[in-house]
Length: 176
Image (cartoon, rainbow, N blue to C red; front, side, top):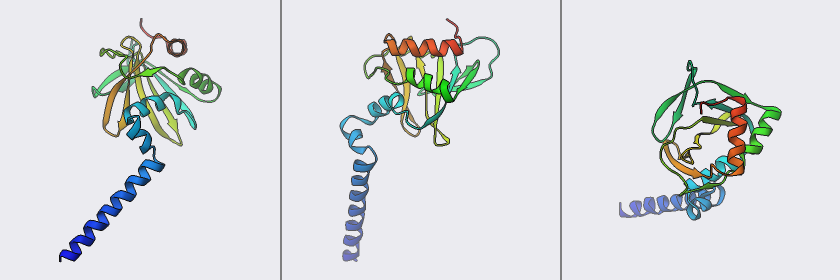
């Protein structure tokens, strides 16, 4: 009985070690350990755009009759939307040009989070990124693990952030 227990314990330890090594080497685990998963996910939200074939922008700060809702995390509330636009082709390229390279940082935020827009990015036939951005409190939400979201800051006064806001405002004017 004792020998069997030792074999099971050794097998479980070996399996855990192999899974850990595979995660660290092949699934960005090393970045998660050194930089932190939340930081990596926040940076990748804007920088990792390879393979994005569709983006949807939702107007949250609007007026009139609502046509749907958009999730605001980590509050777990739904905000009404007042229009949306789906971007593909050249419009998508233009969007990704202003989307990429936002200046993200951990400490640069407040807590109001009254976003003007919600965003969904699609890759390989499925939703891969979703967030809402508040230019007032300099933050957006990031989902580092399924079911877990948190705020992360960005520089709303940067040239890139202003270009993103102007791009969205041109397509879906927001209530100022």
